[in-house]
Length: 338
Image (cartoon, rainbow, N blue to C red):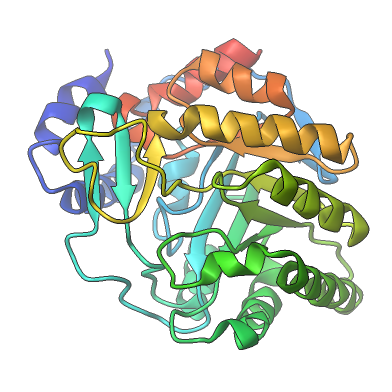
């Protein structure tokens, strides 16, 4: 029985952010009470070696769902091959005013303008230390909203230094549309300087900790081909370990005229699927296998995930798809990619 199919109409009666909070709290209770052990075992997927790490299956949880690492063990029980938590910032911040999360039901889309709401990097580390999970854990890092772009690198360095010993890989998020001017860091000169500094810090931290932790860059779907080529060339030049494509889109052409479609923020779910897959395809062509791509954006079925892999992704991540399909989506993708 698909329990989520029964719960979804109930959850969709609530404001989207309240439903999100209820789901996370319920998942934590279910994990602590042992109820998650009753879930069907995940379908056996082909393990993947990516960024020097062995992923038991190629289906991951995208950043943003568990910003503070509050339900790591609960998420792990759903059968993911890896988890990514965050985005986290050096200092706690409330994010943008509510309401800030909206469903575009007819298009199976979500609009959010959270604005990196989180309890700060130290709180996240405490949650990671308390979790039993021993699998692959990505930690997604960002900058505080009141840190100017000229000093953004300081925030990324602070987070990187703090999470390095606790992460399997680190994701540098410069592509959220909900932190003012953040996407300017994707521009060539700014990105060149940022990648150079973070790569140098990675070397220092690897020597200090005696362990190499890969770093990946998360990019937007709202890039033209010239920008994608520039980003790919910089990733290769600085020997970054991976790239996550993509974040949410500011475009509204796929949801024009639908309820909530005009709400400001980043649009995810089915409406971003084609844009994300196109970026992956263009990235893959330019990267020519020099570093792997993690594909995310609009995956609501096994076939959607297979399209991302065919376009050039090595792994996939889901977030909005879970809201519309529930945890069975993980098994469906594993079956499609087996």
